[in-house]
Image 1 (tube, rainbow, N blue to C red):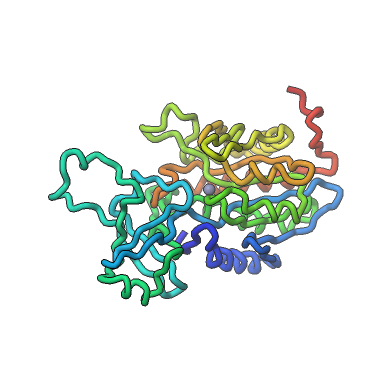
Image 2: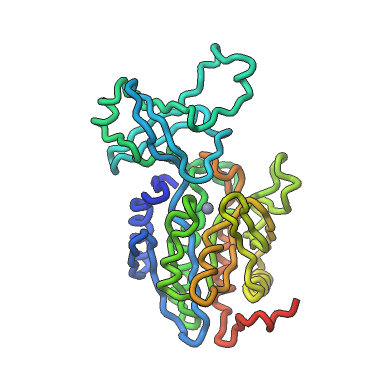
Length: 355
Ligand SMILES: [Zn+2]
């Protein structure tokens, strides 16, 4: 979470994950979009699996450098404007040269009663990095198009809980690494492609070329699931932080995207059985307004059997997302139990799963 990686600029995250996989003895390749891929060959008679999580995070790019040295931003991904006031940012101009900045919040002493409860649209936000002229900003390396992210943070809360920047989806990436550590040495298992995907927060389609190249039978995507145990989320569902990993039975996003994932019934029953066998509590999620790159991956070639699994997460897309490490441990255990139980006769024929 401390490594910045705006969508389309995931290189630093990718290099770190490549090093983690190399440490497990797994060779990685990178495609032209920046997907990082490691394949652990297994029994070729079993359906192959692509297990993936996205490396990128939402944020901004510099839209304009004002003569005064203030910066204007264009948004990239689902930025919650309500949660932007007075945030610390990081302008990524090059490793070791990144620039810290703040989102200026109008002085409270000058705020009118009408302004007090108004959310400032991102177009109006002025970012203050301390520059007193456009020349100063430019000579520090700030350009139109420079990536900008929330200042990376990681905070240990009470119990097993953590707050941090881009838990979405570095937590998912960490689980993929952990599953690779546990499953790669195993001999009786399917071929598994571990994929760290790109540009999910941007257009959800970065993982597509990886799936097209790998031609998996099964795609398992890991990302956050909306925790609904905060006072403002009670009616949204039944997913609690620390209550175990989650399985999405339905996701859909209609605003512009018009996509979602209804999981393959074979994978729903596979992971229900795996949860029972491994003694892992499995929570269920069904939500409109969320979707992941699995919705596009499932549509390549003759169709890929897909499912979204994940971890409960609070305050999503804000600079400090909260998750529980015990849910990540449970998610890894669920995946190990489920994937290792995929045998050669595992059917992906829908007619074998009567409704
Ligand atoms: Zn995500």
